[in-house]
Image (cartoon, rainbow, N blue to C red; front, side, top):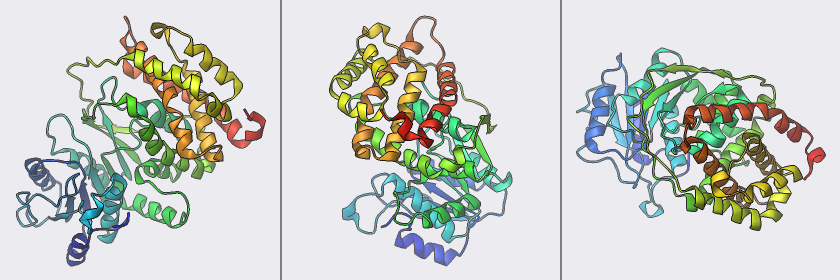
Length: 415
């Protein structure tokens, strides 16, 4: 099945039903009891509403036979399988295909909006989908993004690059611009479809990378929803290269597409937040920074040739100085890290080297940043993670002029 299409069973059901007010896609691997409670929670939304619920699991199996069916969930919505490809031999849908399928179903059913639940939260929370849906249905929001309560070492790729960079570029202080638990209005979906049609033959589109920038540039209404603590898989620091390449490539591609928009933004402002933050009971997370610093030092020895194609001499000089520091003294200045990220974004645009090779070479630098961050939040009298990351966000905003100069006149800054 191609991204942006719906499985045949879902297509037939959509044609039979004709339309819906809301489409809900369950991409998370939830047990049938939780799915049933979600069905019950959806029934409490002010109505009458017709709600289409698409479900399946990460393994590509159709909805569990003991999950509630349309008639058991009452007349307000119906359920069909989402995550099973027509050809099972091709494996389950990718995350991107799952989102595209939900969006395609919402368009097919002319829904006012759609919600996607793609992660597990600590403690079953069937109300989560209603929390995301209400701003779409009743408050005219176009994009509902999650604000998770995160532990010190969770979601660091987002916290160190994606969220602060989007804040600096587009002027909106959002915590999780790529969700994954999201709500999207019909207006935003239609704008995404127009942009996808205009990008035929261009770079591969990734819905999570494009949603927030599209909403920013079209000045649509964004709401953040406090959803509690998300359950993250344990980070595998030894195998981050493919993660960096897969996540950052669509983000940097969208940066290039929206250059005329973000170059006009000068200051940042918060977006509306709904709900109350959920405090952590405790956060005892820690990382072995010696291995992270060793990875940084190894990269500094072996990747100089590649980095010299991307980074100016001043940055290379500072990185070599860092590589000689003892582990316990290792600190990467925010200003240096921000310049590194912006220079890699520019090299991605200019195709200085293979994009995949480029982003994989960022890995030792990212691990160095993680080690530096760990020292800052684990030391005696340490800053809270929130204050530490806010300081980083301010450095991204201060460094935007550097990116603008390099973006507009790259030859003047040729390393």
